[in-house]
Length: 145
Image 1 (cartoon, helix red, strand yellow):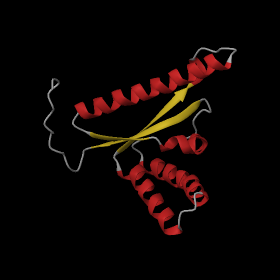
Image 2 (image 1 turned 135 degrees about the vertical axis):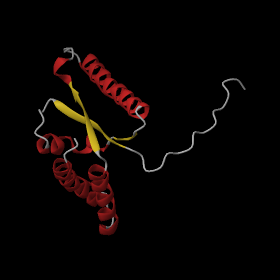
Image 3 (image 1 turned 30 degrees about the vertical axis):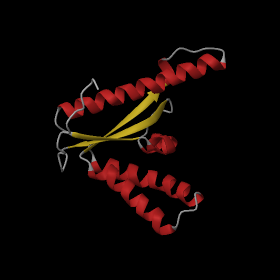
């Protein structure tokens, strides 16, 4: 998503879920507002946000719970592996990328706000752009001791 109004709408919708959860956790109003502000800034400040979703509609179906759970876990692992590959590709292009997993806490809100199919389960969100600071490359330790 590169469209700022869409990301702003998403940030506002997710903030409502976040505020509700933080209130239930007993955080002070000041801490809640600080965390919400930080969350909104992450979504709206990066030039691009990429939402990774899991879709079980093409996965195998099993009658027993053990294999259903295993099939779901394979799908989760596949999304995570795809996310890692995305971060490596971002880095190869000399861009910066950050992976946030908090879409897991607002899946229904994200689906509704972005008009996604119910079969698309938001799993993670990546924020991509040119880094403000490029850290120095650290010296690597030798493989052998």
